[in-house]
Image (cartoon, rainbow, N blue to C red; front, top):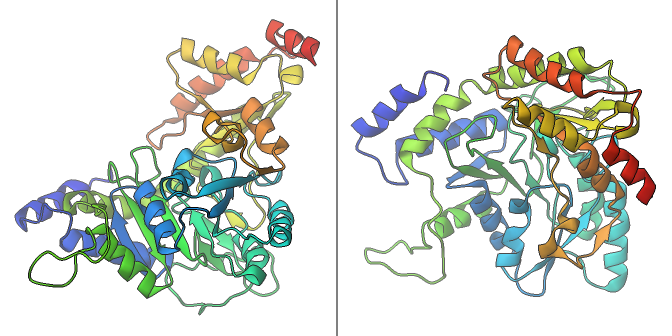
Length: 404
């Protein structure tokens, strides 16, 4: 916690607004819009709720298809299934681990030739690094396909946008000078998509314990989503419903927590990046261990520090390292299992797939909480170093080689 939350929670209680509306919700939406530069924001009960409303607003329904990153969390695409649509998947780019714009272009060309374009494209900002939204927009624009940016993991991350289609003094835009001709324009994650999905779940870089935000440059889009989030009640003195809505609004109390968290978002990003740099300094010399790259076009929030482990060079698999950490009461996790490998999407179309499969089979997410101290990081690094046996090949690796 930042230390500001409790004071804001007291204000929420003093105002007697405990329901999913009130001054804290309104203020949280305004402040998030100011930080991101995305002008219209709707605070909701979860990032998944935000994704559901975004798809509903775009008319996703039975018979439709969406294209999504394969390397993602289920919440990116489950709403499409709830709405009766189907999902197809795009593999990752080796250099960023995000949706590969070239593969997306190939898939959209194939869809166009089949005479059925997707209803939306959903790139995920994986592990706090923005997808190359500038290129993805350029690919989608000729077809008129809207983009829903899954920025659940990337609050506080920025990407470079050379198109400069908004004013340079707009809130939430940083001049980072990343080598472009003239000063580079940095946009917050999700800026420029038809919709941006943010999550404030308990594991995110800032949290409301549970919550999310739907943001857009389209005022009408957010206005109607707001109506749907409140059971689609018509503006009448009695309850009348011309369409079916949802109970998706964020509590005023939780919004107070979000406001306190938002005040320290910049320092949280700095802490996450320090954790990543510390791990890299302590482990960067190990053979067969590679850190997640940072895209040249952006500045990620380093939500999680993620490494790839080559068992032939390192002398142990990512699973053996995970178990080694677990034996010392240290939690780590594999990289997201690609959606096209999930049983629930068996038979779904995928463009590529080898990159995300490799990331899953070799990747490991290390402890990355912003409360970690230097000694915590050193303890994790020491266990990982103890697993490194470059002169040996583990029994598991030998068996794997034998199967190949």
